[in-house]
Image 1 (cartoon, rainbow over the protein chains, first blue to last red):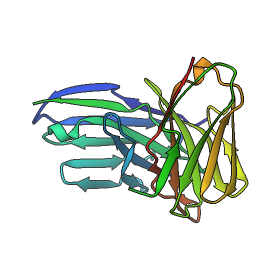
Image 2: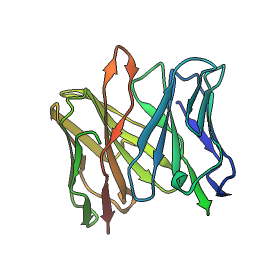
Image 3: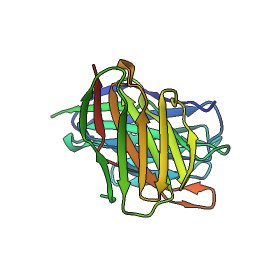
Image 4: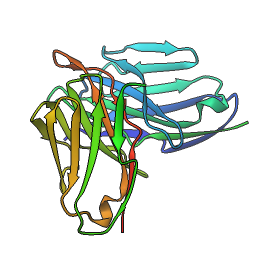
Length: 111
Length: 115
């Protein structure tokens, strides 16, 4: 079945450094979504990518969807302490109506 | 935040007892989901519903059942709780257009401990 792998599992950065998390799927995805979960909170939707090679930006966050629609990345430029949390990708399948989540990347930022 | 609540928010129970978790939405969204979240595993889908009385299994459905008798309510039942079902459970909702699934809105979560 569809699996979504996400790396790294943890990332610790100094404030101001960049951060990237990667997602890879064993199958072609219909779309990919990204979520952020603050410590003790619930996942909150950030963005959805649908098209092959799509790139979207939200302020310091850049999201990419691979040409083959099997991989995606989230890049944060110049991290801030407010970026702390766990970032999840979720991939959609053409064969069913559910989204499969990666294991998440937990980001900590040292001031 | 989307109008989605979960009850109870915390529960401690003993092995072998039945447990029912409730998810309630006020958004009239078609899709509802139950996930469990465990360290190192992220969010794993248990069951989901695409309409009243329409449900399907997710990747970790063994030991769980669901029911959806009204659009706004989605119940998750552990028939006989086991310690391996100790977890944080999240409900989520989403709307659709055609076959496209839109973003999911998550509830606050239920922390379940099975002793």
